[in-house]
Image (cartoon, rainbow over the protein chains, first blue to last red):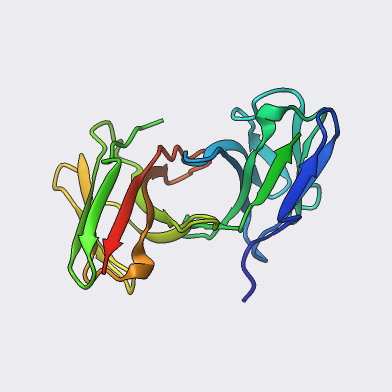
Length: 112
Length: 110
């Protein structure tokens, strides 16, 4: 079956622009996660959903970051007024009932 | 979050076994030990996980110490395609947040 998909794969934004990153999880997976990965480092947790409920957003670095999953499937990570330090790969994962996380390929965001 | 400690890098020869260690001395009773790997320009890939007993699957084996304060991921015959960053993380049964760390970069030499 299809895995986790993310779009766009690459995004270049000018500083100050808003961006929206999409994640399509594996069908039926209840849990969905967003991570930020800087070059040469491991993924850093941003936020976590169970169905449409955002249960943990402790990793969101500022109030410019906002995530939603209104119908409990597709999720969108929105970054407002992007800054250069937001440049990173944004990874989405969904979790099976066995608690294995399946990751998408990521969206590489470059803020100029 | 319970923390894991891994060596920054390891090297192996092709077709030889590889043992990747992970220390997790502050593990709690409900934490599962998960391993993921990440190839260049890809998202992390699930490898294996376990709670107390050793586990085997088609990709690897996971050996868990009796006190659960350390574990070892075993690749039985390394191939060039196994060259990746390997992450050991702890996930609670009701897991939300995961803390990844910087992992071990495995280099496989032909």
